[in-house]
Image (cartoon, rainbow, N blue to C red; front, side, top):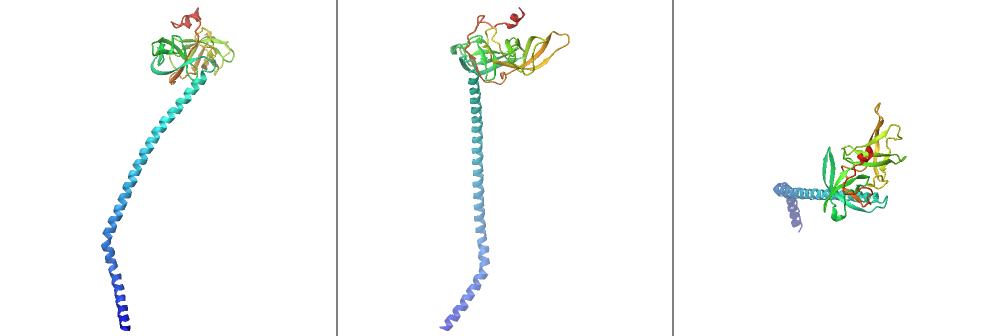
Length: 266
């Protein structure tokens, strides 16, 4: 019995040493398999990360596009709300309209609106945006109308200084950022920044709607009149939505544009 135990102990020791000697060989033999498995896992993880990255980029692009659309919708709603608030000053009925074309050149500043005779538009109708008066309709077809902007050289608009009530004629310059005041005496009480509003004279535009702010005042020696430049408040070159005021025209028939310059000289 003791002999068997002694022999078993020797065999166990020998087996332990043999296992210790064989272990590096087993590790070496198993290394290619383990390396392949690691490479396969790494490749799978890399592919998964690349796919996830592509998916995230795609989602980010979609979200960015939706964000742009949402920003545009929000801005558009803000402009429309401002436009509706602008019409509440005198509680005048109106038609909403949208600009669908333009015809800008140094001699004629006109735009096309998607409202026509079928909608109730008429020649001579005053048009505003959210900030001020834009102009009046000079031609009307069944479904569209042509708007002559106040900056057109053929357009003249009776205005008054909001601060003191002085009345003048605001003449278009052919540029969307400038109007001229005609025949302003050098003694006139005017200041840069003075607000000009529609005077209601001539019966074309309702009283009190903002038109422009005086930007520069100058005087040439020997001249009896001041040189006054005003900046229109309406965004003539940027506004998209407008209001066509349903204003009861007074004075001459609306089938033609009133030449205010001739009335001023007469």
